[in-house]
Amino acid sequence: MGKIEDALHQAFTGESKATLRLRVYAQKAEDEGFSQIARLFHAISMSEEIHGTRALRLLRDIRDTQENLKSSFESETKIAGVAYDEFIRQAEQEGNKAASLFFSQSKDVEDIHAKLYSKALTHFMEERQTTYHICSLCGYIADGIPPEECPVCGAKYDKFIMY
Image 1 (tube, rainbow, N blue to C red):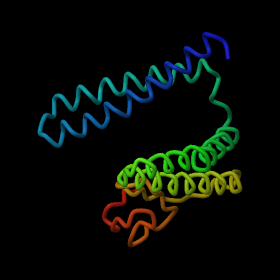
Image 2: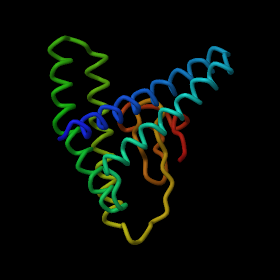
Image 3: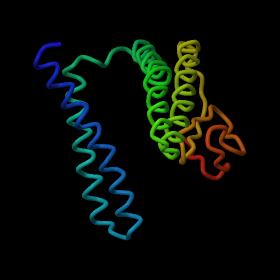
């Protein structure tokens, strides 16, 4: 990877992290009753997302939809099967039960993401219509009808967000 590609990758990573961090900060400000500060965090988050998108485009990492699905499937499979296993091992070695639970649940959800991508690739040309329901606690995604209880973290039906 050349110096410019490396710099673009670093910019994309930094902007992506800032986007999410600022969205979380905006929600916290909303929860605390600071709506104007929340708007500021949301506005800057959107700006950071624009920066990240521009860097991603310059990296030429956006392909056609089928290639994007394949790449996303491979990424989810790799993170679930390699990175999270190591994270879980480290957390267990340190006796950090909260981190171990987080990594374990995240690994399970990443496996579900990979299955959803695989299903989408299989039915790519059909453009199957479905509704997704996302567990607001752990990120599990139900394809179609949400479960009464999240199979990953046990959250009840009302904790699912329809998308």
